[in-house]
Each structure stands twice: as C-alpha cells, then as structure tokens.
Length: 256
Image (cartoon, rainbow, N blue to C red; front, side, top):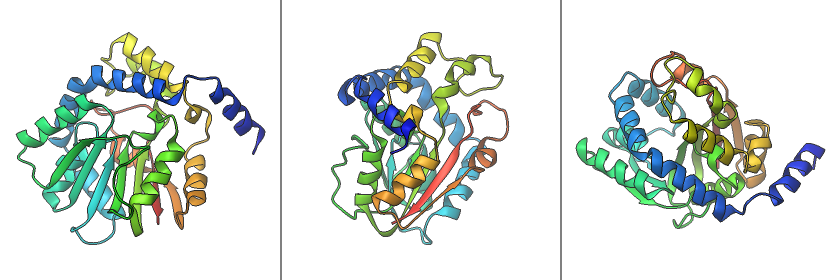
C-alpha cells in the first residue's frame, strides 16, 4: 500500500462509522428530493435525453432485451430514459423520498417496464448474476465504502455483463457552485452546499485518485476489462446551461 493510501485508510478509521455517514447522506438527499425531481424531469424533456440515449447505447451490449440495474437511481432519470426503449430496468436508491419522487415521475410519464426500490448500493438483495448491465450516475462519490459497491455490482452481473459508472469528484468543488453561471446547483442553499462538502470529507473516497482508483479496484474485484472515458462530461455536459456542473464527469466501463 502506498503511503498516501495508508494515510487515507488511517484517517478513515477516525471518521464517523458507515451507518452515521449514510444517515447524513439520506438526510441530505431527503431535503433535495423534490427539487432534484424537478431538475431530472426538465432534463428528460430536454436535448440532453437524446445525448444520454446515444451515450448509453454505444456502451451497452447489443440488443434491447437487457435487464439493467440502476444503482443510485435518484428520481429515476435512467428509468425514464431507457424503459421506453425496451430495456428492463430496476432502480435502487437509499433515500426513500427519492424513490417516492421517482415513482411519481414514472407514473406521470406513463413509464412501464421499470421498477424503483429502496436499497443500499453497497448491500444488494438481488441474487447472483441477475443483470446484464449495471449503470450508475453520480453515486460513488457519495458512498462510504465504494469498493463494497463494486463487489456487489460484480456479483449481480452476469458473465460478460457491463458496468457503466458515470461520476465525478463533485464535492471537491461544491463550494464553487454558487459562483458558477448557469450551474445545475447554483441555487442551492448555502447550508446544503456546506453539508455536501462536509459529508464528502468524511469519506475515504475523497482522498482517492479517481478514476485511476476505480480501474484498479474493478480489476482487483474480478472484472476482466476496465477503462475510463474522460471525455464523457464534455459530450454530455459541455454546454454551460441549467444542467451544467463545473466538475468534469468521467465514465468507467468494465466487463465481467
């Protein structure tokens, strides 16, 4: 173990335990659930939806009759996006209010073939080899033990299954969001911005070199291929509009 990794591990031992962190994370996203649903509804009805469809189709296995797990589904953006295209998708999220908002959105849009469930991405209740693909967006930066999530996602994937993880080191720059024009979260209350930043620094992931760490961890977990696409954010959020976020999104794609 390198010195910086050893230091990070030692500091992590002094932080609040996992359940305390998750409780704060749920509390944070509970407060944001309603406005977050509004944002995702606006995004699914914008030009972004087609950008995301092209992005995901290019990285998924061929064929539309795929069973997909959306880890950290929030209010159901990927369900709104992919279920109408014929994919069978199950979304999970730790925050019940997010799931409630997502179910409302799915009903409003007449979406069938999608299911949303309250569940911990680090401790799934699905059987082994249940899914053809796992997809996640903006989740792993909020996890106390992201390596556990990767193990669980590997476990539930079928051989040859695909993991697509879209993420960024958002909270490192979260204090700048109120200064960014046309930023997705520029209207967040100051206490929410500070709470997000505080939660982030409770987590060992805040010291990791990402996505390098993700690739190494996925290979160690058992994935036979793993690579990072650093241009994903430029394709999906290159325009500084109401969906823009200053921190650069990457995509990690792995094959079991």
